[in-house]
Image (cartoon, rainbow, N blue to C red; front, side, top):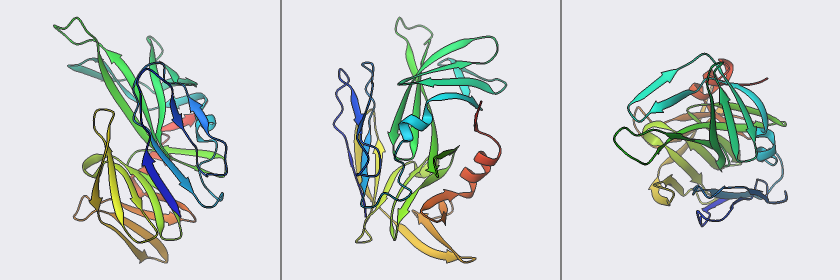
Length: 238
């Protein structure tokens, strides 16, 4: 069984992210005074839960990220060098080095917060960059789209786009979507449907042509878009 709930966040304190599974020790994710909405989840089994996700993210990466220059201008550089150390990530494109705040915001999603200049304002703004991930066999698979974990017919999925959010399917078949609105989690009823395609279980989140479909590989769930990003090297270890 998988169960999730939002953690109360105080921007002046540290955010606590208990990693999956519940048998793993909870870890503190330093917050440095920046409010980060964090989703807490536990599972009833230790198999394939993302225990060690925070630790697995630490270190050196090559990432295909688009970083903002100002609120009105963006750029896409060659693959960035990204170094994650605790709650800080340093991005370097070969010319400019930038410091971002890093947080594991859900069991299958991370957030990078970048300070940017806002023209005509004395205050800086913040640009947010995200990615979805799964931790499988101790290895992070990072992409964009939708990804998550299952335990039997229960599941937790992180997605972006029109159906963005953290989607929880419980043991009673009740599906709930949680969305982070200005560092506050809000929930709404959702539709999650299991089906079988080519011998694989498939979980569909929502309805309509934009509803993400995730293919199960053991207890890991990935959309085709997410898998494509992984294979194209959206994030690679250096």
